[in-house]
Image 1 (cartoon, rainbow, N blue to C red):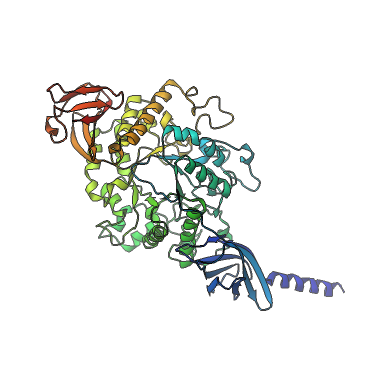
Image 2 (cartoon, rainbow, N blue to C red):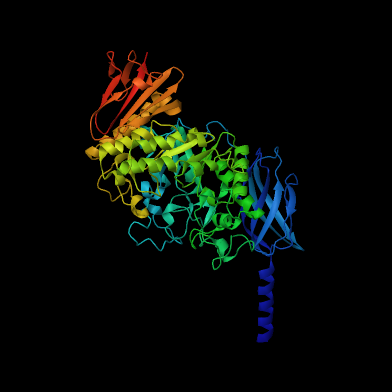
Length: 608
């Protein structure tokens, strides 16, 4: 009798295991009226091989149910008609007599007003890491089921900052003057060193230690209400080895290689424009893994391609994003990522995309911009991170080189299809801060920001650098928590009273520069004309219509008299000048020369 019972039980268990089911669909929803109305659903579940599919409304057409080996997934192509009513529909799958269904909402698109605005040289971008910026909700500092084995390592664990903390500080950022906010990735990173966000374990879900999807959307809305834009930090190249996919890959070639057998990344970013490059070298760049813990996604797989592209568009539409910063751009499959950018721009013509290309060589950097003359593939990438200028500014900060190197980098702008689309910066979340290199020398630190905020391009500031945070060259420590952003902090550098005198001096100086860019459009949008530095004094002009500004930077340790006689096309002894730092007006009194103090900058508006 026992044998019969166990036989029946085993039969029931086996039968149950073969039942078809759906546990999740990605993307979790879509919208009416999208140009991309043919999408591919990635269905998670059980016993999904050889299924048929339909929706409870025949207007949603099932174009294809793809056959794959892994029965835990199904890929279903659907077409969403433009005139369909927004509501929850149900995807129904069947296999023999068995059926299963799952809700798939189709939403009405929000008004495009004040959405997808892009970013340009009129903006000042503020980069922050939510975990290290401000803690607005202490109840999510620890969440059940979410761990990080580096938590107890000094500076490598989570600090507790979150999206609510950023929302709470939006007025500080608005008052400071920045116009665009770039948060490092907020998607779930249930893995090691999880605070940085670049090793996703769920591409459609905000990490609960930072908040929720709806809270992120609220952050975007709150920023927009203050006339600030939001840039999405997106990662298409890799994920975490703790991603659930790694336990059950959707297809055999979902990744480039396996955990046990894969290529290691190299960093030869010149290979795509190198006419002598071997295909094996290119393969290592595109398919190599940074480290074992961040597997490289196979972007030649058409299912992967659809997944990444749809995920990007989903976040833009869901939250109303204005721009994208694409991480580790050169390591993506260049054919795919070019098409990715093209599709995103077709859906959102006003959005801007900046690719992170970490090279200080302008000739190599420039080839990644769209419409480059030196690449076989058009990248369709409008903007680039200007590591070349960053390297020159940091070399200046350290005292290794002078202003001629800055001039030399900018003089190579002929290499770019559009140098105004360079995102300029002096520090970010991956490189030590300006004050670390200047060793706290306030004059030298100011010079770096004087140039950054008055030369060509789209300037980006790194959180805390506006008050001269120093940190170290260690990643965990340079990403130091912002003073006053956390409950245990004894002072708040978000307020004037909470800042030290030197912090206020630098903060007010940078705030003034940002204000000048706003009030004098030539400093942000104007044509640049510059002259080779003499005695480590650099003179350049920004002109826009009838407005003309002159910037003089003295990096030397002595007061100098600057002879402007060679700049007669731009200025003469008959012009009057207004010092934009103090509003004082001056004239040459017949002598085309200006005296400038050591390690300082003068910014003038030129009057006729």
